Amino acid sequence: GAVVSQHPSRVICKSGTSVKIECRSLDFQATTMFWYRQFPKQSLMLMATSNEGSKATYEQGVEKDKFLINHASLTLSTLTVTSAHPEDSSFYICSASGPKARGQYNYGYTFGSGTRLTVV
Amino acid sequence: LAKTTQPISMDSYEGQEVNITCSHNNIATNDYITWYQQFPSQGPRFIIQGYKTKVTNEVASLFIPADRKSSTLSLPRVSLSDTAVYYCLVGPGGGADGLTFGKGTHLIIQP
Image: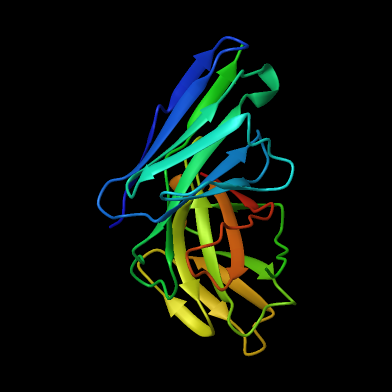
């Protein structure tokens, strides 16, 4: 089945520094990838939609200059949290639309394992 | 996208059948119903998807009445490892749009 690899799984950084998170589709090409953020005991919130070779589309309230997204190839999208602050500490999850899983009727959305970001 | 309503939490015991119902009164004709499972500190995982009537796979069944305004995820003989958050999503899919997650149902399975 479709696999999305996300790295790193956990990162701790100092306030003011930048952190890059990678999302790779291992066995399929993903024209579109998505980035979500999840705070403790809350649901996933879509941050942005990333299309290969073009600028990302950000959801309302998400600062595009703070959360830089690059989707330079059909298998890799990166999210860079710039000048991170403690309030950016969260669980970041990427997803790619790709092959349907068995039993799916429409496009399959495969999720990465997530990145726990802690800003100290 | 149609809004969904699920119970915030449910408790059950190992070996029991668990049914989680999701309401989606404004479901559109071209919408599918999809359920995801999420363990702590992991990304969601696809469980099952359906359009109408009943769908069954190796891990769950999905029951959808004729009016499609609700759906029920059925987990047979649950184990402790089924403790997770279960999300019901309704939408046409298509691959170009991100998903809108509701609050989900936190299922806790006890010994």
